[in-house]
Image (cartoon, rainbow, N blue to C red; front, side):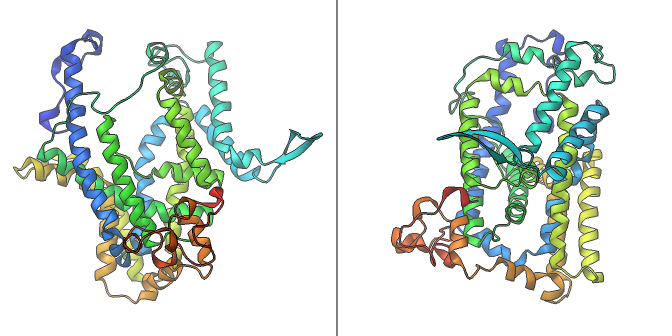
Length: 468
């Protein structure tokens, strides 16, 4: 949206050394852009909530199979190879060490138990699978510490143009010193949000792509933790809640929406930690850390090659998770090879061409231009749309397309308590006796499809750490 001519940065703001960033003129220049984003995000989030809570996304799932999900998830990570490679290329030694440690801890040492002291009635040791729980965090901290030591001893170059300079931990030292100790964000902190038709259509295009990606993320998340596939009510609720999150994010002025983050799916695949309790605690920690500016600034000092090394592993896992969805389809079929190959290749080629030749898409209508540009530069949308279109129009049996195995996988298991534990609401809210008949009829309510019935008693609870 900000690439449109109307939002190009003025010439006088381009020279950072000559700009007074605290001047009222400069502050107004960036705040009016955030207000524009706020209004567009808040309006577009209402569309996402409607699609989710109305059950429309669940209805469309009957037409979505492995040949749609596979290119969508794979194209979340594949287009990022340039970004990951650029970050890693700032110092290949540090990035290679980071990747090596992540793989070492998560794959080779995951079953190695570390004895830790436990104090109870008497002192004893207990086995703790440290490398399985914290592979990414351990690798990040060790490489971060190494970069700090190399910086302190001036082993890394100090010239900004020299190779390896971005591996230093003091390249963003000013961020840490200038950040406030405490700052509480609030709605409307940048002023009253503004709304334009071009902005709303542009963000709606992004919301469409986000929903396609999120559906794939839900299935990928369930597969990685060994949980039952998400039923329709859970997917409806997930998309609706993501829309609610976008509404709150827009009101608070973050200048971006919220969505299921595919990189976290990669981290989940490495750590094998899928407990909802862990996620809730992590959310609370983020809420606390968010008001302490110094803490966020400290994380901003993580060297770029360390980030690049982690991305090389995580993006690879996301790509593999997407491709693994093809196991349900007959990949000896020429039809399926054509659908998947064409979809994923166009998902890489079309956005690359549009980014290089945006002037070729000028229709004379700024709103239409923006929608087309956002959609065609989003690889996961291009690949997912083509996969969806071709898979539902080219003749093929349900077994050949993988829909038969896919639908069987999505069926609620005989042990409905398992699905209720994973996808039910806390404190037995989803059970029939804890909800009115009107609530049970909602497309996003867990009482549907057997999600809140079966082995659980009325209003019973399940251990929080078993819920995804």
